[in-house]
Amino acid sequence: MHLPNPHKQHPKISKKAWISETAVIIGNVNIADNVFVGPNAVLRADEHGSSISVHSGSNVQDNVVVHALSHSEVLIGKNTSLAHSCIVHGPCRIGEDCFIGFGAVVFDCNIGKDTLVLHKSIVRGMDISSGRMVPDGTVIAGQDCADALEDITKDMTEFKRSVVSTNIDLVKGYIKLVEEG
Image (cartoon, rainbow, N blue to C red):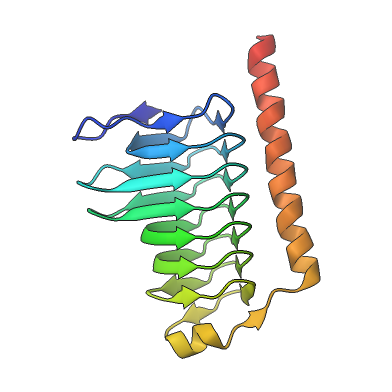
């Protein structure tokens, strides 16, 4: 479902993206090529001055919530995965090649490129440097904790790439199904 917000802003969605019929996209939302938006995902930029941009090759999986507060933006960099049931709340910038894990919550933060925020973690009001990994279930409660995070491992880098690749294949497959009627 694609709806305007009260300010009469409509979502802008690439014809080369695939959006589940049960996803809800409201307002000032821009979705680029090769983006997958899964069932029951909600992307909502309906408050005054809010915006959401999902760059090419990214995926917003089942039950993800992305919301931007008034006068804030959410930027999802290229080839980034928002895994099942995570919450991304603006203001928030997530760099290219990132992974936000199952049930994780990120709010009012900047997450550098090539970074993982693993399952059930919480990042609020922090800057996470590029190439870092937030372990499962971690609460990042201070910038000193964020600065002490370990570097991403080679196997986690490969995992991120495989998730993006799988979801781009899904986009192409679903688009082909629609075109074939």
